[in-house]
Image 1: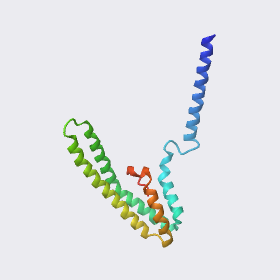
Image 2: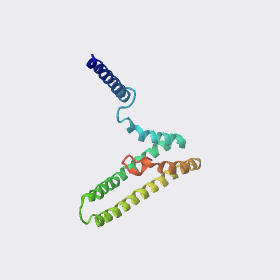
Image 3: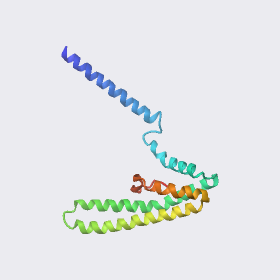
Image 4: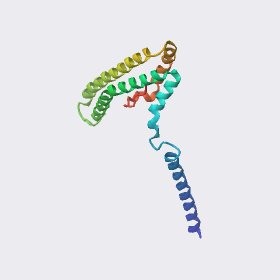
Amino acid sequence: MRILAQNKWILALLALLLVANISLLLGFFVFNDGPDGKRGGREDNFKAFSEKMKLTPAQDTLLRKMKQEHNDRMKPLWEEIRKTKDTLYRQLGEPTGGDSAANVISLRLSALNHEADMRTFRHFQVVRAACTPEQRSIFDTLIPKWMSRPWNSGRKPSGKN
């Protein structure tokens, strides 16, 4: 009798876990955009930017094009940064001389990050120039706030502009 009671609890827990998993899958695939539904986030960011800036349709089109061109120019640099970071952290396994090599790689990484930051800064200068004076005041408060978010430091190819 005791084994039957223990099995009932196990079966009840198993049923509860099954219902929870089904609910999670339904949430991902039926009520959302799938497990990578967050990928539309880049578009959502630009849409939010466009709405806050009150962009005209012509400005929206122009700035989307500028953003795409900027991202296309930045992708090779982001890739080089990623590879340089990989090289740096592979130095952890080096038993001798890792510090001097790591310093050289770190200096290279600093230069690459500086280049990425300057390209992005220049991009925003051009974007700002395409705005009206009213939009520039919004832009001047919006961009520093968005660029200082902690998740922007990863320099992923998504490039949140």
